[in-house]
Length: 139
Image (cartoon, rainbow, N blue to C red; front, side, top):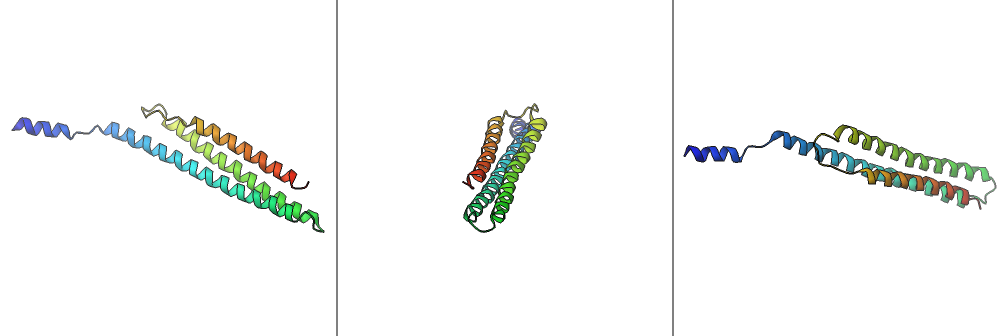
């Protein structure tokens, strides 16, 4: 009877260090995915603002005071580009924090570097596309 009680006690023992490592790993994954969603929101916002800038600039380019359309277009496209760059900077900050604080602590290997490089390339392409849209707007 005492042997059965000893077996039951051993069955329900939990390695708390391992559980803590798993929870930390999952928390870093959630934080990283939240940073990706936030980056996507900044990109959507910047894309919309830049698009409105190009649209307003194109629609008003034949008006009497062309400088008004140019000013509005420059302001909106600049805010859109700032949004792209700021979103990438925030994403980079979270990526750097996770990579410096959570790697090497016996956590499961998580490779986020591909996503980081992809986000960087997307940001550069969007900035260049916004600038190209701005310059093509006046032709």
